[in-house]
Length: 430
Image (cartoon, rainbow, N blue to C red; front, side):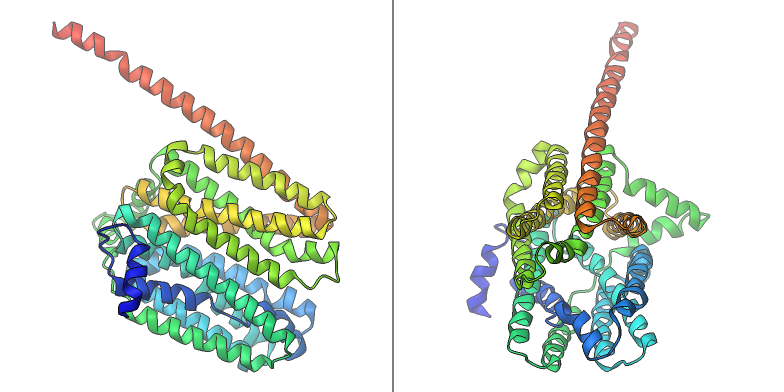
């Protein structure tokens, strides 16, 4: 333990209030929660070992997790309110553990559908962990803690992907994938149990309980949470960027296959994209002051960059260019998402982080679901789909430029109005 103390302390700001043991606990939890070697080969396992058809996996199984995650994401704030963040984190870790036990032991279609519901719950509870970090750390350490845990999670997924590809090339039985995954999730559950208990829900509980009507209390809390134009703009960016990036991730491998169906590097490229994201998340610590000074400009530039890159992916037929662009988009998004989470946390006056995170993510998931439904109905080619993604990011970029311009005009007008009465008041006093 002593040999880890110095390098771990070096990762945090000087005189940090976070102890080395707590930091190690958080990082081990972040790593073990994402070290899932079976994940990249879940579809082949279901089709070759469980003998489900690809149509059943795509249409009858996987959509359940999307709808479940939508519902559970919306319920995260009440869950953390009444159960505490730690309890929700523990339940989420158990949910993911149960998910892979069901995949391993289950045989029926119904069991696989239930597995997707537990997976949707476990995925939604990751929001509770993001919010929990903000409750543990003082405000000046938000960025460092967020960047460190995000970097650890992304690196973990990268190592798991590379390991699973190596095992697959060596034709190792799938049971080995499951054993490694379940051991990792077992460690995750133990780390979750060791986390210190939070008492954050008292503020929100009192604001709701003291009102004559619970409905009025929630409405007031929601208004307090999204108070301020900058926080509203950033929350809108959160939902838009989340939806667009998720679609790029979902359809990325389909585009690679359409360009070159013989390529065997998809697994490595997905791992490299996670590495780029982790590098971006780590660099967010050093970009925080610049991002705060630039305001919305850095986020608008990020959307515009992803728009151009998606269009290039859609019109290009070169596999290496598609790989490179995919990696760059991942790095841009993860960097800005890390900066965004912390900026929103600093702007939040009532400190109800889980409420902000859950509603913003729900909006992003809902937008992603709508866009995906439109794509399925339109039956566009995967190349055309990426052009549509570029158009979506372009429209969002222009909308944010317009909103920032109108917001600047509004602030200018309000300053002028506030300054006009002052001479009148001074004259009356004289």
